[in-house]
Image 1 (cartoon, rainbow, N blue to C red):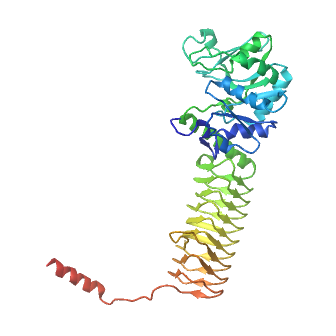
Image 2: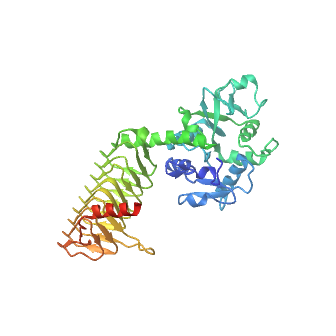
Image 3: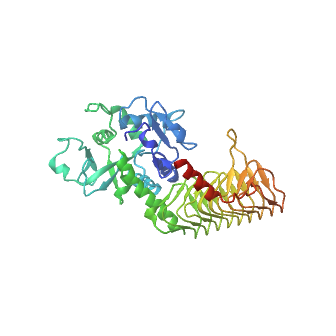
Length: 435
């Protein structure tokens, strides 16, 4: 990845890559989920409650990682029994249905291990799956360097996806017998399949219908490819739930966003974080992050809603408006060219163009409170902390520094003074300087 950030912590549509298989495993009904990390424990901070962390003391390969996970599963009681699934933190598109399908297929097969496979037109770089006459897995042939596989084996287009189901007892017996006698001096988990076969046990295969589900990420190019597929799946999920996305290819919606029915998302909109949008809203070419929109809200175009923003029912945020940590009341409007930060705006209020809440005094942030049915004139600045009462007005061009009583008109601007003949005198002065 050419990055100081661990690979599986790179973002994928709003969640670290590692959380995609973790969430899928939980959704599939896994009794326990263990994530294997290095001694630095960089993944610990992002794991959901209840997900366990196992530390792999040294980077000795996939076999060493699974051994660390099994030790965690066995710790503090009787050795774990039943099926152990092994997923990869850099294979994020494997969904809950696929994981559940693997678990069921393994249980029905009676095999000691079941590997996930897929058929690819171009199998370059993948381990090839060699089957016996009964259709069980005979071996997995690696193809990382010349001579690893024969010409006949290279013609096989069934590949190992790196996803496994093991009988826990069989896995526990096989792991101590893995050998690091290879160029990388690492313990490879696929060697456990050879150990099981040598013991006379069966290794079965479970074929994926969708090869995209096994796509792994090893660099930023692959991450971008996976992100396109993940984003498409997110957008399709919303559309099938009744959300109108005009151009899915021009819309970014992160994993945890919630959107109600009959909301329309127009092109070039980005919705991030834990944003919640109600029903019947319209979002036009805007950027939203960690905000809440109730039913019937209209946003944009070119609006920026920052964390902590709440738009109440039927409120409107228009063109080139930025809101931050503010609550816009039901039916309230900020139509255009304004910044509203750290403010509470009452229902039915309408703030004119170029309205600014000056919320920062150089040391602390302060809130602005604007009541119900307030009519703010264009180019009004509210210098917080300040309160504007219900049904009040502000004159255009005002800088409001004192509280405004309910129903009052605040005029807070310098008196206009016209300098007669200014242009003529200025020209004469410039002419005099030139001569």
